[in-house]
Image (cartoon, rainbow, N blue to C red; front, side, top):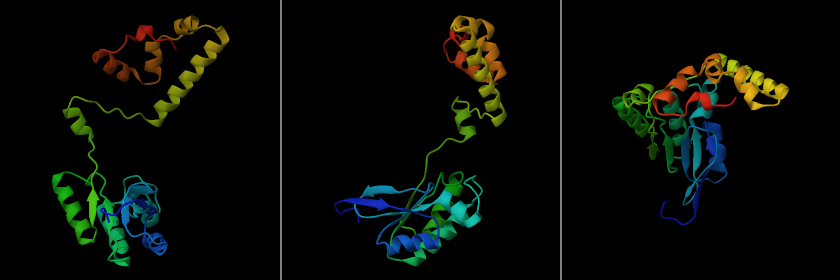
Length: 201
């Protein structure tokens, strides 16, 4: 298939019925992917089996990382069982764990009859911190506070008509603290970032 000229088109599938529809439409390669979309590869056609869509179809839930390896492998088994001659390429996400789990993921997908898979190379929070990086996750509450802070700053700017008055009334440091971004500004300062005193709100 890869030796053929042309491209591989991959419509997304997430379960037996969507895979059957794609096969009946004439696609001759299946592809499992985390997002429900269409992929294009070189040579031939390809069908996209989606982890996010699998979570929705199998569990009736959004992609909140609640589906497990057996959920994905079971759907892969169903899909490969529809046409043993049709290759299935799987998106194995990050391998769903450390080295031992990656090995198990590959083994279980292989037993399901897939032709190949790919694994994302992503940092975990711990790995990032070991390399000197810091991952900051903002809560919805802090985002709402930030939105209100920006709205108040813009209203003041609109009322006074100058950036200078706005900046004097709302010190950037106080603003960052109000919207719970003071930790970000401290990280920026330690990294050699611009002094906050020069920021105009």
